[in-house]
Image 1 (spheres, rainbow over the protein chains, first blue to last red):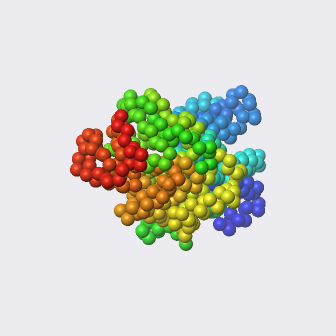
Image 2: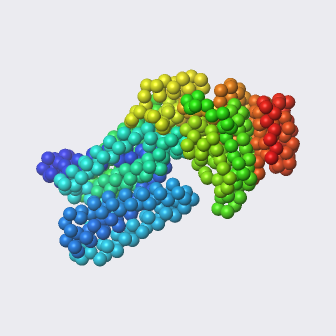
Image 3: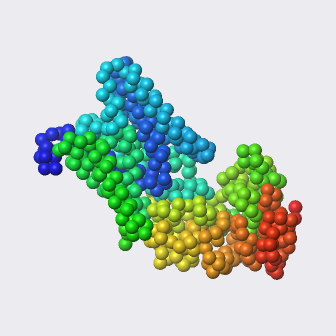
Length: 284
Length: 257
């Protein structure tokens, strides 16, 4: 830990990593709370895995066609938004087939990504960093992108707080009130998709669902209301990303996995203590 | 009454049929609900009660026939409905307070941008007062009893000043004493607004109800005094006794189709 703090002053990549973790935590805490409250973590999982398709395609375009502006994160954003809209439209139109479509988006996205990565010439070190993330590779320009997306998610998530809350709680009721429920639901899924993309850069595709849901799920034991859950899960998320990064540094462990295990242990602790107290929640 | 008074029926279903994946759920249903009626829709589970509610609210489209709400297509007029959904349709662990839930009734037309206005909050507080929920306003949803839960949902339905109150199984999760209290309250509300409630238990058809619509694919309307319908006796057997009441329907509400 002292090594981590010492090197923080010395290495800019470590400061970028720390800053990325904190920034991402804001979006993660807010959107993760919607995901947990609405119980749609499997949708977030499908979006996360489909991101591989976009990243693979973008990387292919970058290498094969020399399109240097085609950053993998850009591909990730496009893939995540398409997946969110496909799943959202299907679940609104044909509710009973929702799980099938979620599974299909999940797997097809990965398959597309694997094909592109396979066909991309050169050494494919990227696959591993897409799947498991590499927070230590976050660059200065990545940080700007992360900050921009974060601001977008934060502002939209807060401006439409009442509508998102009501749509998540009881969509039929607010439809009667004259709210454009479908539009709000799709917008919410798109914001979740953008959050997923942010988290991919920190913990990678496979562990996104955990980072998205564990802070919010932990926070739910301490909150009465959604905005309290959001605030608390931002704090938990900062704790997990910063703590995980610091813990992983000296022994040279993968940061993403350490962050997730840290988050998982805290969540399980909260869950076990709560059930030992008879399902109580820790609120005054 | 926020809208100009419409003198025709509040709800009108004409030759309505509905099929779900080719399976007929409702066939040739005719139903007229007038201003200040108190209608109870009864029938077995899967008989089409909830479908009728969803047709009235425009959440489902009939396969045949027409549905009119205040003389208009349901989508145009459904903001005048105060809707209380089934207990089981909501997530009891959802992180919301009592006041949060009631305020949802103020969303929609003419709402202020990004936050609730002062008058929204005042209306919500009034609805909480009426439902005797004021001390519980900050209580999280998951700490409510079944009866409190139902009262919160009713407060939310009332906070938009509806002309028609639709309730889906309002007493499914409460004990008999609370049920009686709820009926007293609905009876008082019925002095100003029209009430339609759905229930699968005929014991709930109390003497406050003017008309009973029995739904099992087809629909038969009775005044509460005259229920001897074959559908009912076939489905409910011994329970039929429970709905023989002495009260007359308000305007002789008999409309055997």
